[in-house]
Image (cartoon, rainbow, N blue to C red; front, side, top):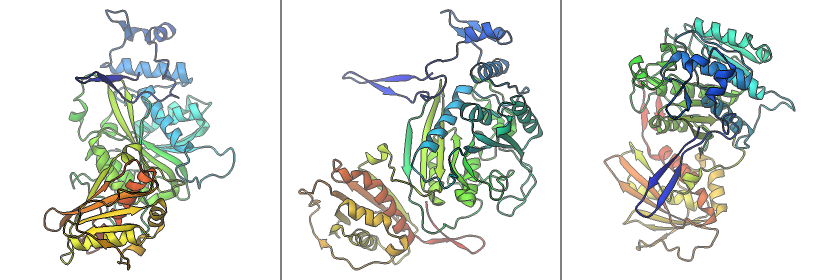
Amino acid sequence: MGSKKKRKRKRGVVLVERPTIHPRNKYSDNPPDFAQLASLYPYFEPFVFYSRDGRPRIDWTDFNATRELTRVLLLHDHSLNWWIPDGQLCPTVPNRSNYIHWIEDLLSSDIITNTHAKGDGEVVRGFDIGTGANCIYPLLGASLLGWRFVGSDVTDVALEWAERNVKNNPHISGLIEIRKVESGKMTSYGEESCEGQLVDSGSNTLTHEIEARNSEPDFLRPLELHSNVNKSYHGPPVLYGVVRDGEEFDFCMCNPPFFESMEEVGLNPKTSCGGTPEEMVCPGGEEAFISRIIQDSFELKQSIRWYTSMVGRKSNMKILMSKLREVGVTIVKTTEFVQGQTCRWGLAWSFMPPAKKVISSHVAEKSVLSFTLEGLHRQYSAIHVLQSVVTFFCGAGATCKSNASAFTLDITASNDHFDAILKNELSNLREPAPCQYKEVVSNGSGCSHLPLNDLSLRITVFQQIPGTLLVRGSLQHRESPAAGAFPSIFLRLEEVLKLKFCREKTSAGGSSINRAR
């Protein structure tokens, strides 16, 4: 099920491993045997044919074939009775199992504190956004792991068949509730929603820790999307208004509408998994829909430990992660699901207090990071920003050597200095504090005799266009044991400088918001 691809170089061959099926996935070591399944289940046999090399195959462009395959896999491997009517979205079992096991990894990790824990034997409770007629995630989660689920949807067909699939499995039916979303009820922000769309293996995980903001950010509602301000969600409620007052969940999950039109859906002629417009299409696509989940998560905060969604386009990951920074989440985790030739990504975030520092290995390896300061007040220039960087580090006891003519600052700091910075409240760093530093004219870092456990950074401020500065941080000694703190420290510096120097943007209603990006 997993695959590897080779990338050739002139000097030898380098193997580049792609993500593989999750090790706990039932199909990790035993992919489905179509010949065996055809011999055991007569209704599946007509859909199996043999290629020239004698291998059993099915026609992936035939909806009936993919539906029968899902049916026999759920029965044979999971003891689940299942069916969906023509045209409804037909899920692939191995891919959906990967998502379930990834959430299992999140719940079992000690990255965030579990304030929902009520004692031994507490059953995990999940919320499936847009469960569909197939109800695949609640069925798999309940049968594999004994989890409780609430599955929501908006169409009568989806609700009817989800209920049927639950009732046809009495051994787990008590664990699953199907909840109707009222498409005409008041949305989370006081506006009446219109009739709208509700809108493969193992996981190599990239982890990003984002420090929580000390005060709740003000931002426009609905969230404007960076790529297209018209891509905002205007359909039925998603989480806020569907999750009831006082309810708590360990996670939510979602297979969002990936497309903006049904024409987009038909661009892949190699598969046929069905899917109604309500399941597949949303104005603004997955970017708009997941942005709405992010909005709702800001309202619900710690009512749900982990908010998660599948993402179909990698290009949307950066946009969505930027939005998560805007709302002040504590942790973001991502993963890649590869199933055959299909790639999907998983995005998870939480507002729970972090239990420990987590820095992605791929981020920690970066020696240069940067961010822009846009919309600076007229009275501020690059030298003012540089002075505030001095205050930021000197206030924690670090050693700073400045070159004002080159707009650079060399910093030597220990783990204790960095801990002091990360533990400080942002409000304490907004105004300059008295500190002493040495001004030099050399461009050298002056850190050739750096102690083993100290870290050397160089911060440079560049003018880009009027009102915009680029702040770049470079790690001078990557081998230092303290190098892993670099991304967190640089992120905190970005927050402080943007809070102090960036103009406030006035909305149509006259309120102001921080121009965070």
